[in-house]
Image (cartoon, rainbow, N blue to C red; front, side):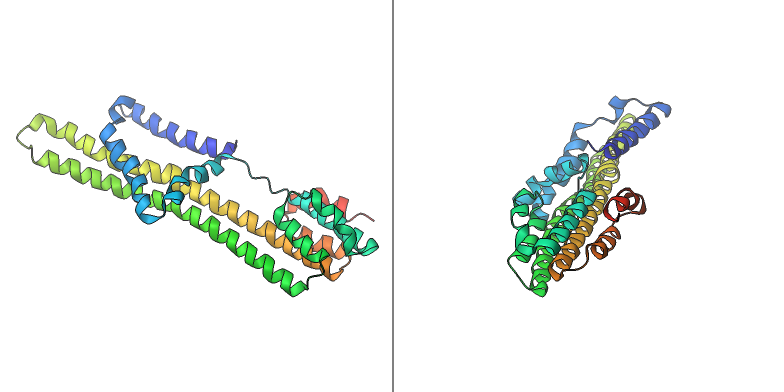
Length: 260
């Protein structure tokens, strides 16, 4: 489980609950079924207008990614690319063919397969960059759905508030009901703000960060693959690949890959 996501969601809702109790209220006062349907269910159903049925149904799977810790294993990939480079320089590119079967990274496997097949470097770059472009487009589409839910929820909340106010204003003769009716009318605005600012907007931001991390990894793999295809010195390749790591991660692996 992604601890930062759990801490953020739990912490934010805890602060809201604490604010409710310290202001003299109770949780039951803030539970309203019509407001829930109007804001949560209504904003979700509005997603069907924005995107296709599979995309809307798949939004929960996309949100679920925020609960998982991404494992890109940059250090392991660098070690593997350097091993490929060393073996290719000693035994030739064809010697790498057997090594490719053990690769779990399909993007890296595809690129190295092109190298073993003797494909020109310019063509390899074009094919892999096109593959990366398609990956980014798929990610952007899923993130856009999450972001749109965060945009729609406050709007549906406002609609619910207006609906409640209209009903209240039509019954002004009952003075004792004005306060409770106003509270219920404002509940949808609260629900919309909670959905947008605690869930959807932060999660879409986390997904964007994860997309950037994966893009950086794929760019590193492309550079490594092309360096192996060009027959570059393994030490030069190591220096190039390590530049993609953070300073802390770089220190953990550079003694291993740059040793004499």
